[in-house]
Length: 411
Ligand code: ADP
Image 1: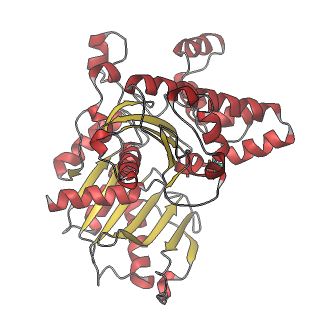
Image 2: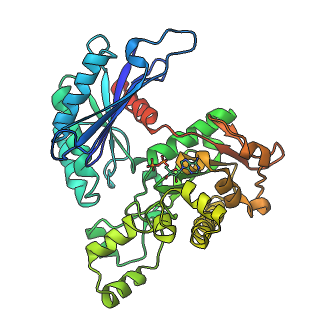
Image 3: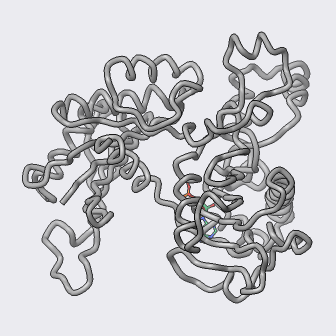
C-alpha cells in the first residue's frame, strides 16, 4: 500500500481523504465543519468510509457514513479529532502510515507553478500570498501547520489551484490598466480550479487514447464556483477566473463578469462600502441573486413552476457559457474535445445541451440520448460523427493532489 493523505483546509472546515496510490483507491474520507464554533456540538465530523471492493467483505470501519457533533476550537484540534477517528475506527494509520501529505493551497501567486515540498520558507511564502487570497491562504496554512505538527516525519506537499494556469501567455493574463500600478500590486489574471482543469484535461486524453499534446480542449468546471479553461496541448492558455475567483461565468453566489463601473455607481449612489460590494458580488449574486437559490436544481424546479426569475437566471447562466465557448473556440482555433465537470457539469444534461446548442457551426453535435442517459464515470455525449468530442468527466481534485504529491516525493 502507498497511502497519501490529502488535506483541504478551509476557514472553518477540514476535508481529508486517505488514498492508496497503488490502486488509486480512497480508503476513507471525512469532513470536519464549523471549526471555531462555540460550545459542545458546535462542530460536526462526518466520516465517509470507502465501499468494499466487489466480492470482499467490508471491514468494520468501512460500513457506514457516520456523523457526530463536538466542539473543535481550531485546526490543530480538528487534526486531533481526525487522528482519533482513524485510531478508533480505522483504517489504522499505525499499520499503514501515509508516506506523504498533500495540501490544497488556493493561491500560489506568480511564484508557485508546480507542486512544492513544504518547508518553513514555503510556509512564509504562502502566508505572504494571503494578501491576494485573504479568505483562503490563511486557512490553508493553518491546516498545513496543524498537519506538520501531527505528522512531523513525513513530507508535506502544497498543490496550488493557480499553478496549472502559470502557462498563460502575457496577453492572456494582463489586464489593460496602468502597467506600473498593476505590477506593484500584482494585479493580473491568475486563474483557479487549476487542479480540476488539469485532471479533466488529462483524463479526457487518456480516455480517448490520444496524446494530450495533440489536443485542443475546452473544460467547463461548473460547480458552486464555475470556470472554463482552454487547454492547448495540455497547457492552460486561457481561463475565465482572474485576479480572484470572482471573474467569468455566472456562479452559485458570484456574479462573474460585470462592468466595474457598476460598482463605482453603487458606491456613489447607493453609498455601498467596498466590503458591501465584496459581499454583494461574492455572496449574494449569481443564481442566488437572480433567483433566490444558488442551487441549479431549485432553478430547474422554479422554471417548471413557471417562475420567471428562475427562467431568467437559467438563461443568463447559459448565455454566458455560450459566450465563453465561442471565445475559447476562437482563441484555440477550434477544439477537439469539450468536457463538462463538477456538480452542474456532471449532473445537469439540460445545461450541457443549452450551452452547446448553437455550436453546430463549430462541429459540435450533441447526442441527446447519450447526454440525457443517467450514469457515472467518464462518458461521451456527442454523436459518433461529431467532429468535436463532448465528454462528461467526473473531476477528482483529491486524487490529482495525491498524484502530484507522490510525484514530488518520488522525484
Ligand atoms: P463546489 O463548487 O462547492 O465543489 P459542486 O461541484 O459539488 O460544488 O457543485 C454543487 C452544485 O452542483 C450545486 O449547488 C448544484 O447547483 C449543482 N448540482 C448538483 N447536483 C445537481 C443535479 N442533479 N442537477 C443539477 N445541478 C446539480
